[in-house]
Amino acid sequence: MKLNEMKYILDESVSMLWRRKAANLISVIIMGLSLLILIVFLMVTLNITGFIDKTSKETRMYVYLNDGVSESDSRDIQLKLLSETGVEEVVFISREEAMEDFRETLGENNELLDALDFNPLPDSYRLKLKEGFVTSAIMKAISERVESWEGIEEVRFGKRWFEKGEKLVRNFFIIDIVLGLIVFLSVVFVISNTVRLTISNSRETIDILKLVGATNKYIEIPFMIEGAMQGVVSSLLAVGLLGVIHWFARGYIQDLVFIRLDAIALFVFLCALLGAVGSFAALRRFLKS
Amino acid sequence: MTQDSRIIAGVYHLSKEFGRHFSLKDVSLQVSNGEIVFLVGPSGAGKSTLLKMIYMDDLPASGQVVVGPYVSSNMKRKTIPDLRRKMGIIFQDFRLLEDRNVFENVALAMKVTGMRMGEIKSRMTEILTRVGLYHKRYEYPRTMSGGEQQRVAIARAVANRPSILLADEPTGNLDPVATKNILELLFKINAGGTAVLMATHDINLVRSFGQRIIYLEAGSIVRDSEKIFVGDIRDRIEKSSVSESAERLAGHEITGEDEE
Ligand SMILES: Nc1ncnc2c1ncn2[C@@H]1O[C@H](COP(=O)(O)OP(=O)(O)O)[C@@H](O)[C@H]1O
Ligand SMILES: [Mg+2]
Image (cartoon, rainbow over all chains, first blue to last red; front, side, top):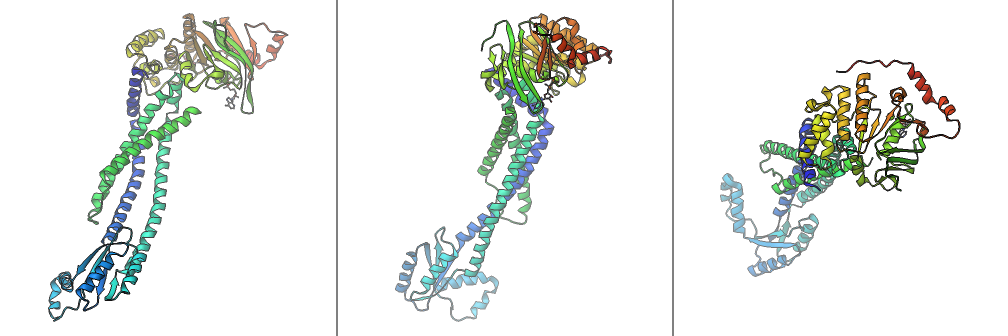
């Protein structure tokens, strides 16, 4: 490509953006709002999965020992627990520590405990499971096995609550994926239509460019740059609006997570790419006819 | 296929169907370097379609079109811009970019070839002076009369010094004065050595020039005034609707408001 030609193509791109600033503004607003729906959806998903993840990481199983289990038997139990598949960590909690914790949990009302002249709590082991093993089925299997051992009083992990939670999570993911797909396809639909509209509004310009002998490159590059710019500006608009929504929502949900900066950069880049490729595809179909 | 180097554009046994009701049928014609030719026929005869085939916006189903070194049968999408830069094309509706001024409209044809700005500017002065619009170079099409807009279109068409100019009803939207101006300008351009092929439905407009006229009717060439026809061609012409419409038109005075 000649240097002059390259320069003219860039001139053309800039002047095209400028000449059609009103139409471009409308396109950018339409695209930005539809992208906003997509990233609001992403942020909600991100926060819910984050919450699920955190909850599953914080899940512990408690193995309560019978009264009067000897220290060496207790050690054996600890070792046996450690060798169970899926168990990552086994922490001993003496009945005294358990009492302290209990006292702390009660706070102000802990004088009630002073009335007790003995400690009713048993020694216990707190199990942390490896990632991927925090499911009700695995925990049920472990607890059944462990409960059959000598010296074990009972194993607890909030079974009922957990099963309900699991079902909820499963339903959430199905709904999330279906909804996500719908939102994504709608956004792609809106954007590609907006781009196609831009191109067909330029039908005359394109015809004239062809008539005077412009190469496809000369016609395509300005439109691709325009598409990319629309992608960048509309995605930044969407991110900005999401920021505003996030700021307001923080008033209700303190630890609401925002989309990570690198994910935003990727999002903006992908939107630019979508804009450029969308323009290119729309033009190609147009130039062939 | 090669053709005589004196021929700038040739159509050879071109046939093509367009939908159910229209086809170009075995059309052949040649335009020599520096020649001016009028393509005349009633509306719907296929003049625009035939010109399209010559600027290769469409390719023949059978037969060939040859323009300079470009042959329709081995034309590639990539070489179309090269062809377009070597011919000028104007239309009834001017086809100017409304959002650009005269300078920018004309410069476009040169910019797409990658010409240096210095060269573009010096040519611009020459071309715009030739069409008499140098003083209006920063005006926008919508502020200009039809005749002026067509002159801008002509300036753009000749900017790359084409060897042939195709004109499809260039005066179709113009009043008589502007029509006369544009025809004069086309002759001036032709006098400069550029071949001109102009389509019009209005035989009265061009019959007095004493130039070659090709008659097109229902997709066939019924008469080429330079060719000697075998058989009683006169009879055919007299019965044809071209002559009918010509007679009809001959009875009409052209009316219209003067421009400017
Ligand atoms: N792509 C096409 N498909 C079907 N019919 C067409 C097509 N292009 C042109 N025509 C028809 O061909 C005929 C000739 O059109 P045109 O070349 O514009 O005639 P003219 O320029 O002589 O008035 C018209 O009847 C028009 O409707
Ligand atoms: Mg026509």
